[in-house]
Length: 128
Image (cartoon, rainbow, N blue to C red; front, side, top):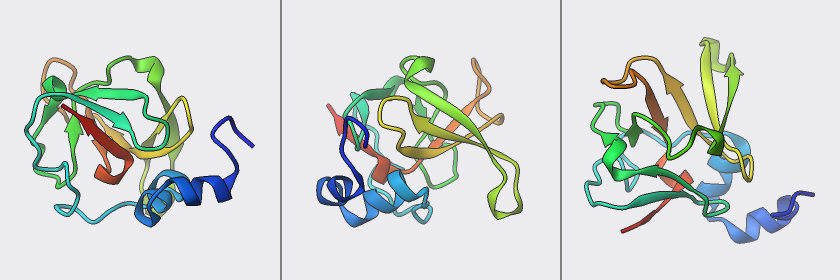
């Protein structure tokens, strides 16, 4: 059991969609999440543990249908893992604090980083 509780505690704490994404590595359909076309200024927190992960200044429209960021607030707030599922080679992004699945990292983002952190809206909470 983590400091955030066992799986039953996660099921109680999270919505069914958040649970499937954060704890089971599911993906929401593109262009359906609340933050893919969100343009307010503020901070994006992990929906599992509330750690601040991304800033609106680093968010951009990638055309992918998911919230996309060029960088995290601090790289140490994320962990990266090889993901060979679904016949693809990708880099999975997880919250370093609670281990929740956030999305994937791709090397096709804009300058200055060239990175695209493609994140599920349901894995995030916005604070304006």
